[in-house]
Image (tube, rainbow, N blue to C red):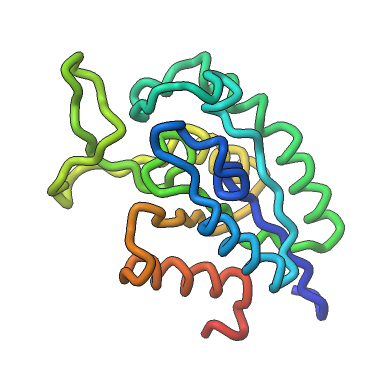
Length: 193
């Protein structure tokens, strides 16, 4: 790290633009403001990629599970959407900025970091609803876009934490508290320890 810690973050678009979220889930502007205010207060530049669900399926799409998005067509679409943001990341790093982390969204089939077992709908396909009591031996996958971003950053030998905002957890929950502690550690490493 240089004397002046110049920081950037890569973030899922719906955390900055809640209108991108699936219409029946609603928009959470207070959440977005909380995140953006924290990043701006700490002089963190934001790089966001276009929402792959919105750009592939529009605003009035139905909620789906990871299984429905896991196709060669959607993966190709995600790869295209990552091209410019990854160029920006490389340019910032080349000019001595520090990529602090990637910030995704809890229970997102594309931008989540911990996609576990989900309920199956009447068509025997994965629903967007997590099971009520997941077992600890269930595999946990990243959302499709987060997984592809991880692969691309690994190719570039860029190692950063992948965090997800626990939007489904109450404001005063332990999960939210842990998230903010983890984010502070990546943004303000000297202060948070």
